[in-house]
Image 1 (cartoon, helix red, strand yellow):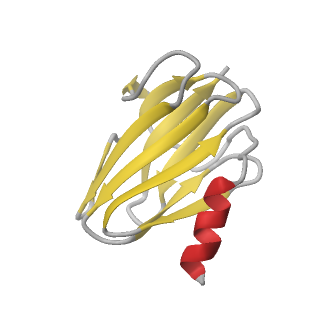
Image 2: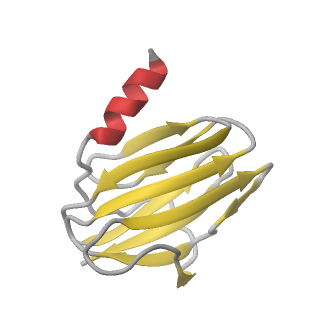
Amino acid sequence: MRRLIATAAVLLTVLGTSTACGGDDSGSGSGSGGSGTKVITITVKGDSVTPNGDRVEVATGQPIELKVTADAPGEIHVHSTPEQEFEYDAGSTTLKLTIDTPGVVDIESHTLDKTIVQLEVS
């Protein structure tokens, strides 16, 4: 049931700006450019995550796919309005979202206490 709820939440449109938990403001993220889907590859292994605080530019309303590869199940927190939490399984999981309001949105692992990526939405 929890997996079903998480899957349904992934399909919802995420609106938002962010002002949450902090993190560093470094680098550029991975993914495609233009108005197509922005793909961000995330790897979680033990207590490490990559990317780790990278800033990625996305257009308002641009589809975003978080392609998560993890050695254990976990959760990603998106500091948007409303805030969202997405579960992932061990192995590979693809999470889909769209941000419709300009601003900076932190995507974090609260378990690891790390900022994974900051979306700069414009």
